[in-house]
Every structure is written in structure tokens, then in C-alpha cells.
Length: 203
Image 1: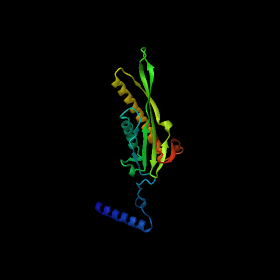
Image 2: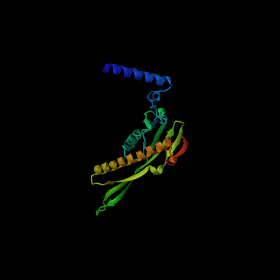
Image 3: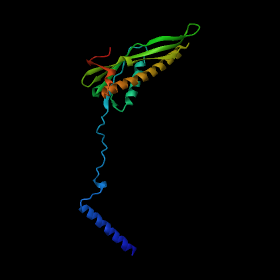
Image 4: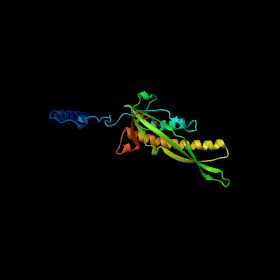
């Protein structure tokens, strides 16, 4: 008897479902389209190449330190895809390191410098695929830091290099911010750049 009841219920449900379909009723689960996973507003990453910087400072490895900091910073930005060949890039970042400025900051009772301030200044520009050259605002590419002096020349030099590494990371972040605004402007982002025309190399 229970088996007969179950059979009758199944037949009744099938009949009701068939009748609803015949009258034009459809399940919302069937008729609702699947959501699209493609983000129509998303942009593909911009291909960017970083040319090794010209080093006009007395530090022989400073160009590598600054360039590495910029590659790390640019590579961490979702909007950029780093490429090694500038010919394949949509944006090419290039520039130079100006001569360092080093000043004594504090002295001991023996008139020996205890601290020095080092100033790192960059000249940076971006070359578009069209050939237009955009020079980045120089006021944001100059920064100073303080390091301790020592009677040991090597220790003093090591402290100076550490200060320059910190400055390189800071200026690399500013360069990446400026290139992002240049590539995808938001509001008044153009304030950080200046168009100089074709082949306006940083001098």
C-alpha cells in the first residue's frame, strides 16, 4: 500500500509540472542566465619597460640599486606587465641619477661630523608608443635621508648605501604612482607629468 501511494504522488507531480509548462510557466532557475565572469570594465596590464638609469653619482652601483627598486615597485602594480624589450613596450621609463648632495648634519666636541645628510635626485621621463616623451615632475623626485658617520670609512660608506636604498625605494614608489596616473588618469593626475614632445631625453 505505501508503494502505491508513492507511485500515485510521483504521477501527480509529473502531471502538475507538465501542465505548468504547457501554460507557459518556467522555472526561474532554468530561465535565469548565468552571470558573466568577464569584467568588461577591466583593462589589460600595460606593457612597460624600464631602461637602466644613467648614473652621474660617485656611487658605482647606485644605478642598479635604483633600477632594481623601480622594477620591484612597477612589478607589484597590477596595471603593469614588465617586459625586457623596449620595442615591445607601450611605455618606456628612462632617466638618470644626478650627482649626490652630501652635507654634515651634526658634529662632536672634536669638530668631527657625526651625521651626514645625503640627497638623491632623479630625472625621469616616460616614452609612449607614439613617440611622445613625458617628463615627470622633478619636485617629487628629490629626497634626503640621514646616516651615521664612523671612523671606519667602510662603515660610513655602508651606512650611506643603506640610506640610498631607503631613498631609492621611496622615489621608486613615487615614479610608479606618477606613471600609473599617466597611464590611467584620475581627476588631476596630469599635475605629476609634463609633455615635452618627441625625443625629449632627460638631461
